[in-house]
Image 1: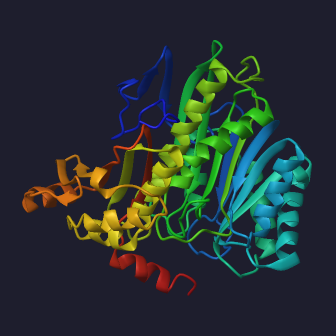
Image 2: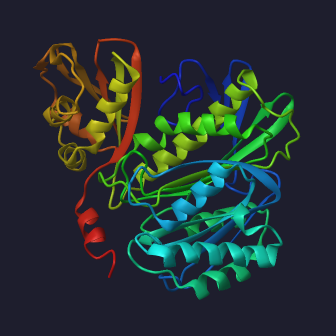
Image 3: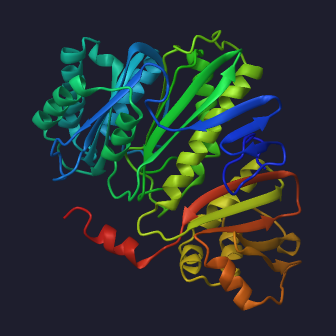
Length: 437
């Protein structure tokens, strides 16, 4: 198991922890998965509305808000072409200012929109200032959808005015917000957990969207995390930046890195724990919970890839270095030929070895072992540089499951990593051929 992962999630159980139901036990710590998402932590509210940004007959704006100002941290797209909202949010995070909330629209990305796009961010935040009585520069904004279209500012500001009075701490409000930010997603994505920090019960929740234009560093994803823990801003940023490497940066659907990727976390401190100001046991506990939440959301996104029918995991173990393990795993799940083989339930292991070979990592193929795994069984197909005789019917049974793992043992070291993707189906082309129209 990756050193970064101290808790287990479904299908990836750690030898270092014990799971009973929705509770994880690790070295005296417990973490419970609870109902909810962004409103699970104390003091956080959410709302949604149908603003008619691009879609008709569905909600397309969401707001997450805390009356108490929050420490904030974030990570953003590595794409040189950044949406106006990414620039806006990064300025807030980098400035050291507290954050009160985020307003999100789906349908139009507000990317490649010039000064007019930045003005739309300002107008949205100013509308929140007017009705909520908080400084406009404590409101983040986020957009997802079609690139190159201007946002209808009047619809944005009217949406803010609709949502503010409807803000609610209920779990239902959080779930509704997670649905409002969807574009080609087929399911909403949210999670919440509780755990102990210094004798205080704290909560961390989150929601995300992402289905296509997904690739490491980061992906077409928006993710918003809320917590009532009290923690130093710099430490929270450190934890988030580290956790991203083995969660959101380890998924791929189609090899495209978006202009809009945004991951924000807000901490309002209402749990009342002694503030985490240095690394140690309490920081580690927070980081472990953060890892679990981010990995769960990342896996949900990979499984819900556009047109996908299967979650496709590559697990690389015993690599020479952590970077090698990450690179190999990502290369396998990013390969279109590998993804097509998963779709066709084809035990064509040569495609996975090929993807490893062009990844840029140097290794001896004679040392590699490769297995197929799913809830239907485990089968080794390659060892010592040669194919093994295997039962094609057994391979087909394993590959027909809705979650498939290609397990790769490098026999070169002690490092490991996992990456998540999905199969490549006919529906992916259909969805993206008419996305704008």
